[in-house]
Length: 189
Length: 109
Image (tube, rainbow over all chains, first blue to last red; front, side):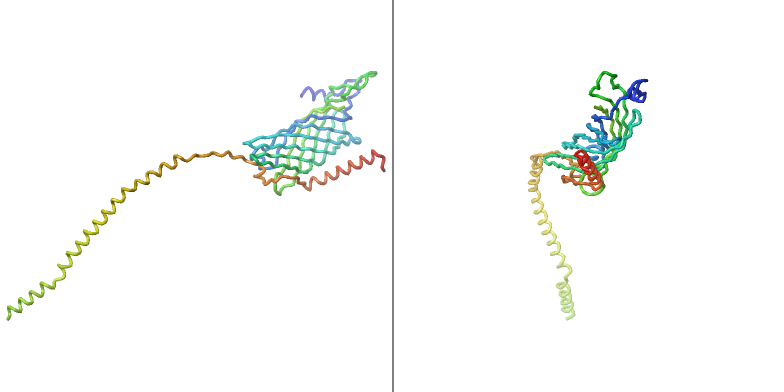
């Protein structure tokens, strides 16, 4: 990790063009969520890690659309809880050299299923997510020198973000608001 | 005559003495009551029936049920889709952006 970050901030070699991660990016994300709901905390855990996959598509200039899906299954005392957050955020990320800080806002659709004994409860929540993060080009993928053509992979980035899934308190049922954090690897095509 | 009167008075005082006569029945009544109580004590030996009650709990089977805890039950979750108002606004905004992108792609001004 240190080697990747140091190479990222080192930038391209003299006389060498920087890599171009402006295409579509596929991000493999490891997420950590801290839940607001006390019932989930009492039975399962106050939070968990999730595996996720994101696709970041440039729309116009620094404006991007980030679609992410993740999933986690928890078990406790014969009960099983599955949660699958899906988000579609509009992000603003002006690139400065090898670093791209960004902020995003958008809706999230969090589906869940709990099986306890013979009973099963399924549902979903539509909420909002506010996200801020950073993408750093590792510089491990160098642009080809002419006359060689471009390869399929244009850049390899490290991505880090912190987010808040906002769910209004009160009412019956799960409160699926959560603090979220992610560390991921992005491949730009 | 004096003798006759004297004997008459003496006889009268001896025959009407109630103190001595009432003392005897009182002691008789007490012995009867004592005998009745002792008869009732023999019935207590039949209480051995109660010893058979101790055999009943030995025949009972204790069934242990596994308790499954449900977070949905704790939270009052009944399932279904719920939309927070805080989530509807960005969802609507996203749809507007999507529609705008589609119109732009089709060349609709």
